[in-house]
Length: 319
Image (cartoon, rainbow, N blue to C red):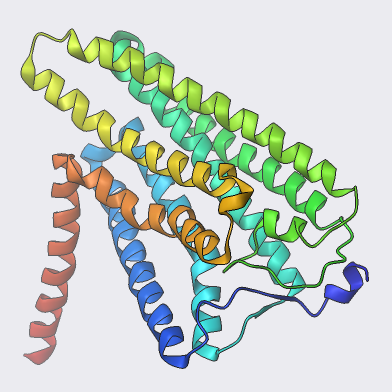
């Protein structure tokens, strides 16, 4: 059995067997998806429209919101459509596209979080050099480098994964196409190339994590030496949301990929997949707006302007 046999597609994991639970899954994911679209859309609009937020920190936050929107749109709509139509299928090309986009967006987002840690480090530990080290050109280059690294990871992983002969059927025990689940379908030694690439990527991610950790060690040392309580509060308000987002990503990914095989089960894999692919894009805006008054005010203005304008237009039309 070769890859040609899979041109008709794969079978994804069914969230539930009964129609009622399938509709519940559709409704739950629809609510999460709409909340993610609304929250990330508000951040993008607020940062783009408010000139006070045209700073490097909010520039990176805007790009993070864009990646979050794309990331959750890669997996959730297909899963909702399958539940609504009572099917499990995904085409071979659709599966390849899902793998490529998911790896690309995940890699770009993690690289961007590393860049954001550097931005916070320079802003707090080297404020006099901030304009030089994190200027507008540097911001564009770092954002482009984050996306380029994600694209390279995705290209290598997708090409390697879908060049491996698959002999173990076409059933994936996951809600979306995931590389480890596809590798389970191969009994060929050629899958070791992809395993080696995954290990190499894991080392790169660990290096980024160490960089973020060391950056925050320096940041907290500098913050604790600040004489002003207001200055410390402002510094923590800038850093804690980013640290919360990084912690959420790392904890869910480590649970997903580093749990022992004895703990592996379809139900647990399903829960973990939802945690690292669906939850972060939905809750990241909450983390960033919770302690950031400037961003909250800008988002309120966007909401007020939207509803006020619509009400005003309706009144004019009525007259």
